[in-house]
Image (cartoon, rainbow, N blue to C red; front, side):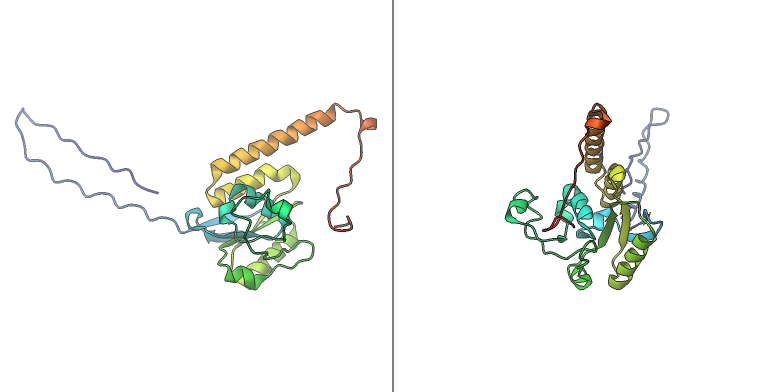
Length: 216
């Protein structure tokens, strides 16, 4: 941060002018932090570059990709999948030409060498359920393999706002993160309120399918 500089004013004594005092030396500016340390949602202590130093980030799953795309697309260094032309048309311009660096989810085709070569400074492991021991182990393994800090964040549905808030603090985008968190919280509350008006016996069941055969 920067220290505010104040100017000392001196009055005259007994109505007579006195020689001006020598200006006090300016306070030295505090050094800009180059690192930050966080305790992630898997209970791991992780040291990573300060927000001002971050230029390239990555994520180990499509869930993390969505959070980062919507919060800081200009910092994203790759994608976890290949997109269709139709999908690309709806993505931020920063994303369109990014390389596919793989994912730890599903097919687990994450490419550690490509991540290292891309100059990525932090990897976010955003889970869709409460993080467990396996998530911590996977994060440690990837961090040890690449030398890149890996931060585990709980991105489960009920923790959507929390995930944005954590990312916002780490990336120095607290204001943007709060807007996203507030929006998601409101939408979830609106949906819950609407569902509550429908009797249990009149509610429909929904199967959400992914993958070419709907089994992913």
